[in-house]
Image (cartoon, rainbow, N blue to C red):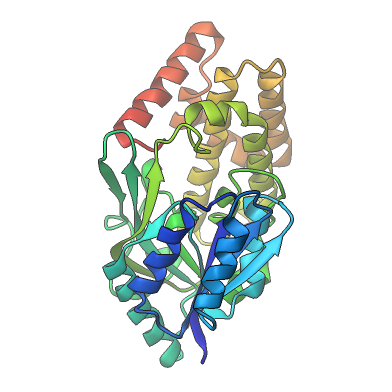
Length: 343
């Protein structure tokens, strides 16, 4: 049977979390034979390899397993993509899960596209922050930005707000699109999901938005990659990812559709601003020097991208000069974090 969708589940020492992620797909899809799950054991040291094999043995034809040496999240995402048999590919991190009713609705739509030969390059849905500390949740939706109940192109989108970026959680690509563009996800590097949610977009010409709260994303744990202290400690990796995004496109030359270009410019600006804030929070002796080099390299790479990123509201607000300016920039970031609860 033709697989409608493949879910790639990157796993590293995920034994305590992976069952819920896998079960949410199986139960939400009613164990449908046109759904494939690829569990990628990324060199785990706990019981993840054995549990992955047990799942595959229990559901042959539905679950496949890849065992590989540890390469990081990006290598695991790409390993799942290599094994994907589905027309569509979606990543589910092992400590997250999918809502059953939303998954059922998504599958009905994707099956309709496949059966009728309708090409949709990118399927977009909502995601929900599940906050560990206070047991609240925050839904990120795109009702004000994207058309609903129709296939559309980038020229039909509205203006995204800074908290409405299209993240890995909200995206489901056609598999052939991802394989064609080959997103450059570096090994042993966190935050590769930003490349995954950015670099393939110009290759997607037909889109569909389903206003469903599909992806449930745990947030607020102290060891999480988006925890403030963790991000400060990994500022070098954040800069590495942002540099890869920078070098993916000369946005004003390479992206023809103005609305897509504006969205990508906003996303890239946000990444530059994150680098600016966490470099200021870092105690690393070279943090500010590396930040200055990143801004300088951006200016040399593309003057227009530099001007938009550095001299827009976000760029100015996160790069205020002097010790007082740094404190104000950090305070503005923390205020935004408190309001929108994104880490």
